[in-house]
Amino acid sequence: MEKLGMVPFFQVLSADDLRQVNRKFSARHYRRNETIYMQDEAATMLRVVVAGKVRLVRHTLEGKDILLDMLKPGDYFGSLSTGKNNVYPETAIAHTDACVLSIRLSEFRTILNTFPQVAVSVLDITANRLRASREKIQRLTTLPVEGRIASILLSLADKFGEQSEHGLLLQLPLSRKDLADMAGTSTETASRIMSQFQEDGLITSGRQWVAVNDKAGLEEISSE
Amino acid sequence: MEKLGMVPFFQVLSADDLRQVNRKFSARHYRRNETIYMQDEAATMLRVVVAGKVRLVRHTLEGKDILLDMLKPGDYFGSLSTGKNNVYPETAIAHTDACVLSIRLSEFRTILNTFPQVAVSVLDITANRLRASREKIQRLTTLPVEGRIASILLSLADKFGEQSEHGLLLQLPLSRKDLADMAGTSTETASRIMSQFQEDGLITSGRQWVAVNDKAGLEEISSE
DNA sequence: CGGTCTGTTGAAGGATTTCAACACTCGTGG
DNA sequence: CCACGAGTGTTGAAATCCTTCAACAGACCG
Image (tube, rainbow over all chains, first blue to last red; front, side, top):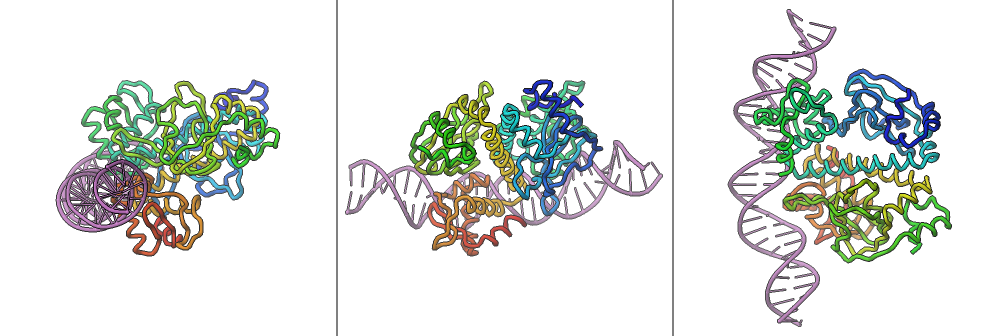
């Protein structure tokens, strides 16, 4: 259970402090597509991915989903602030089989107040996510769907890409619907654009997987 | 210059601590539409609005602008993290005549490490902005332009609305282009929709100002 | 081996952008 | 003080991107 040392904002702690913090966390496994928590549920826990991938999704009234973020080991999620009638703003789902640590929010707040460096580190991570989120707003509002998908493929390649025989293979299951929900478009449009990309030699793709072959080409499309 | 006590994340400090922190800040006035800092400039300062409004804008290569946020007294902006080759991810412009406090980033980091409650408080605010940003992503990707504008008017009414003879008057200059840049649409479309809203009695609007008359009506449009 | 999930493709319809023209307001300088 | 020009707001019509509806093929699962 010393995987906690892998979490970026606990890396500033000494081994002793880490051990003390570790006792407050409890671990749990989830199977693929199992829900970890639901949007609008009372928010009581902060969680950290230890193994596997987790996706954060917002649901609309008409059943349209927005895929907000894809998390990998070391990423935190869940709630941070203890404001009253505080609810999770999104649903968290195990995108693959996953192992997740969790801690009561009140106890995490105690940790933040005890170890200022941890608070500053969490702040850094959150500020970076805010920046990323705003970049996404920019892309959603200025780029056509083609460019949005190109830019999504590039950021996924940064986070999940690993060299393989097919090129930069994204190490996570990724359906056309997942892509569509990230780009804010329909699965049909996402499919058409992925077919086009493949035809142009930019990517290689099969059922639930994608590999990037031509980063430069995608970059051009995503920035025009 | 004791307006610093107004800033949410300094309200946890004692009068003595506040005085000590205050010395590190310096104040400056800006005139309407004056640039405070530019996107991609080296990020060295953290700033706080003391008077007036400030808008945060991202520019694209083709000159399309995205209006990310509208700040009022008490709101912080600028950079938080000291990572190397750190640049401002957006441009900050005085939306009205404004007064702004600023502090070197390194000094602010010292404050964060000295007063953990301040760090936690800044974290709360940043986490809230992240939540708001993700809500915006949802609206941008699921709602038609009409709904996006309705929801923008509602959040502006929450933050800047004051009761007046015309209804909830938004206390800031607000052009059709501003609205378009927030909704990710063209000024023409924004204009058409505002005309429609006015015709339907939802709002009253003139050159650079808007008042909300029927919150419930706008809510319905923004959530359908 | 059937059923469900995923991916693909076509065609019609709709929402929004773009291009264009014009009215109005405000501030500034002659 | 007035006139001009820049900035702002409005409206129309064509073009375009994207969605939606529909049908179907293949893959994976029990």
